[in-house]
Image (cartoon, rainbow, N blue to C red; front, side, top):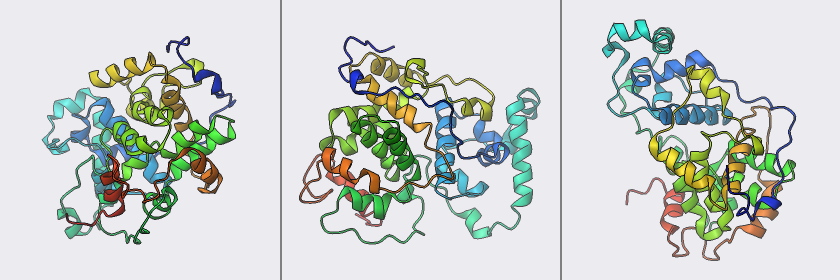
Amino acid sequence: MANKGRLGQVARVTRVQSPSREVIVEVDRRKFLASLGAGALSVMTPEDRAEALEHHMVDLLDGEDFDHHHDHDHHHIPDGAPSTADLDPAVLDTNELLAETAEAEAELHAEDHHQDEEEQENPQARRGTGNLFRSNERVLEPMPKKPTLEDFFRLRFAPANHVLQSAMHALEDGQPEENVLAGLLHDVVQNLIKVDHGWWGGQLVEPYVPEYVSWGIRYHAALRFYPDEEYGYEYPELYNRIFGEDYVPPAYIKQQAEFATKHPLYVSARMICVNDTYAFQPEKEVTLDPFIDIIGRHFKQPKEGLGYDNSPVAHMWRTIAMPDNPL
């Protein structure tokens, strides 16, 4: 637990008191497992599996119900992972999860016989690829000459249902505006890159937000694996329901979480995790409008426009603005 004597921000935080967890997006367990494949699942780390599940849920929330082949592009499937056909049959006989996955995968393949042959031959995007770089099928409107955060939400981050819902939960719960802003920004970097998104995300916004916000974004990805009853954060039971096992995060995740737990800004990252669990509601529609004033008060919009202010992260914003540029 965090050192409460050092947590200067704790007094500003409203503890989550919601009596029950709201309905989250429904995940078809067998379809999701089939989309991974037993071969890939056999070599995926706990973090790979958690990332794959969260990205799948965000895609569903944004209205993208990907089939088996598309899902492989989005999941954190290790490069060079074996196919299910390559697995030793004895492995399937002794591992119920892999056996169920192989069975579900076979069912999905049977339903997928209309898959376009050309699509099957297309190379898959690497698992850490950001949303804007998955394919070039989405037509992007040009950005204004001096783009604002609002412009990025409208033209590059949309539909952004997950982060909008996260911010709305913080707002409706009466939490400080910094928590609302952190919820709004905590995953937007996944349009650029997914791997280690907490660190990339914190860096992306660091020049423009209070340290409380950027620090929380940086460490929320590690803390999500660890419960904290005092702040109303339970270990996400969906992970265990899908995979049927407890997660053992890799050593570097554990190290980051231990560091964050002892840090004065611990609460900032922890509350992102809390608000995150309420942000997968398929029937809840949230717009950016309720957060415009909060952005104005806490986000330092550069007068030159995001990407053109010569900040250490300007290149990151330009990359998001111009994902089709070859150089």
